[in-house]
Length: 454
Image 1: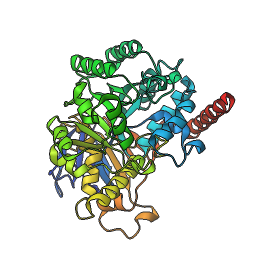
Image 2: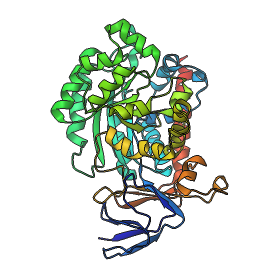
Image 3: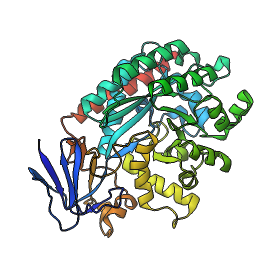
Image 4: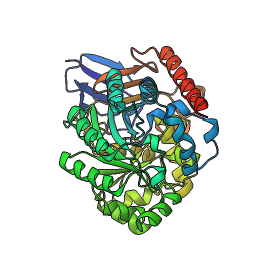
């Protein structure tokens, strides 16, 4: 087993108080030693990697995405709309997804994230039209092929627009089908040990797309199987109005009513909470996925990160779907989070360290992971390394701050579970040109399906 020393990085963010300016030592899948500035490793080293031109961080962790949406970036009919109208425009498009499209869109989303320094990706796939019942299986296959750590949330929609919900009927499933498949996916794919590469969580899409009964049953399954649960919540005021009209409850009250207000839950967006609700969320150890670019694109609002963290909420970072971002770039999302949160709190109250924390240990904690998210002895060797040799960095002084402030967009090297997966900015062993050719054709074919239905 090789022992690798990533030696003398230009700058390093560990997420802890430990000094790792002399580098990080990896054996197998884990970090076994942090080297202080000017010191030598205590372990015997087989491979030395000169990191003196690299800014090093824990692998970035994405807490919320919709991979299938890479096929509908900048989709003309969905431009300049807010959430509910945007969804109603795109649901009929997405109902045309098939297995081939799902394969290529998953691979492109994962590759895009890996190239931006992401080592753990979570996807919320809730749209399962007839013929795509094995969508999550295809995603697991793609993640294994690329050797990226992934948390796939088995999404669901069961409340059609004819029953007062938002999605059209051809995009929903029966509740029994959803429950049965949730059990199957946990049984077949969910890994529970430290270093798990594939995990399954359960994820009804939102309060306006599933029934109360399904929300309650999902909570029961999650408790019995000891898995996490995920959903969209408090993204818009429209959602708040929907919950008040349909359930007679504000969204957080509804969450408690269906048994979701506990440490197994992380929520996407989490923008429109009042002060009392934030205290309750913190007490319940809820996780929140902050999605700054999407929140700006759809004009949904600004998440209250500082108050949430102060209350004990675990705040992570997500790129959200590639039709509301319209990308899957994690290091770019760190910069967006920094600037959007400064708009709320002021530049003196949000630093680049805060943004990096949300994208690493905050994300890990939000999704119930203790083995990733920091550079520390015993943690998984998930590491992102960035060069500052592009024109955008010329004249910069603080390398770690420059990584965010000057707009890094691509990692030079990425290690996942102790193995290099990105080198010289490219995913090892991948024919990117061929993948993009297939992906573009799939996007074109999906658009042609929509035209044929009109």
